[in-house]
Image (cartoon, rainbow, N blue to C red; front, side, top):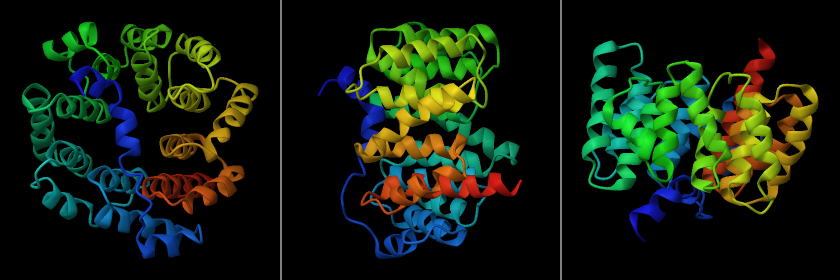
Length: 303
């Protein structure tokens, strides 16, 4: 498979790489319930014993998302030293050391080095996505170059980094990819926008138009629907979009994972039944995302 194809399907690969039906008994037992401690058990066990590094990272980041940090740093201090796991493990360590400026800067520097020097295109893309997810926003030449001429996921991830500046023009350039005919562009742009706490008003019509034009059987569609659900401007739009989103509850691994990720951000108590269904899924990564969402909804309802 050539580099172009590898980039194009990276995000799907990250989601489905853990699709093995094998599952650890503690996770299955905990998934029978949906209480706080059960969800933490699912995530903690997946972080330590997940079948892939991506499952471990997703579980750790789900714990961090819900303000649970116990054991994460020590686990990833070991993982960052293992072959093939340094880049993605560095992202987790940056998160756990967000309030330690010197350590945090060291991890950011590592990711910038990997963006330029990783021994694979995939590694460079993971480094760029990691910088975006960490809120990095410096318009370095290498990032601006990817934003202008990058192929596949590189262009969207670089524009995500630049849009972290909060400037309208930078978000406009990222959102413009929603009008692209290249699935790698509009899929990755929608995926990126789902992580934004709030998008600019001009971005909403582009999300709506993209959701309307992408065919139902297009694997990229779930990412557009997910992002529109999170940022829906009205109750009517959110409800309509949620109906479309929940249709993926019985879809592929990547689709079920994305449903839970969206519900972690904007789900309500009404979604707990759906999430309990995903918490009992045969795939570990799906269970991780469901546990994350259940914890998040429980937390929001206590506030």
